[in-house]
Length: 283
Image (cartoon, rainbow, N blue to C red; front, side, top):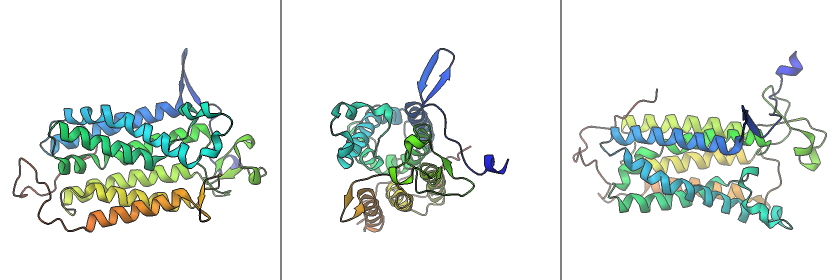
């Protein structure tokens, strides 16, 4: 009994069967993450006096852009995996999305849509900041079904069982590994609540909550990435994703602390900021 409870089993299939339907779990988790993020974003838009429909308008363009950016990042940083079979570049259902690329392109497109619709960028960024790690946390569960994004061998009670065919060559005799995708998911859930708490308390200047998200995500990804054992592209002997995580931390910190010069955006319904940072509570 102890042996059964001393590890997390991996699913036997990449699909979830619902009657005659067979749904790819990886794509399903991403879709559920997007839906949850949109719902949270709508509630936070409404709490800040913005039109909730603006979230849907942004998501229609930013989500596909984020997926494209995430795939491009993965292909560029792990291009060796596609040598000899370049058509696999388009096989997103097999896994392989680089979150930093998704953040970059999704954010750029989201800013473009918000500007076109006249949505105040500072308020929109503050409202959507907690929704992004929520989407990432749910989407990470897709890695569990694909048996990917796990870490070094581990015998901890929550270690993850990995099929021999999915293990790195040097760890073929090691049955259990750190579930790093789960660590990142839990970190992102915690980050979501921290962002909401900071916003409710008014502890971050308006328009800078997204910077806290970038900083927090970079910190989490840095220590999680340090546990990874799969093959990855290296730069000066260090995983590329560790370099990128460091840049996210640095960029988020600079953005957060950069003097505003009195130019921070204010709520259109509260121009003097007297309403404080109260926000909708997550049920």
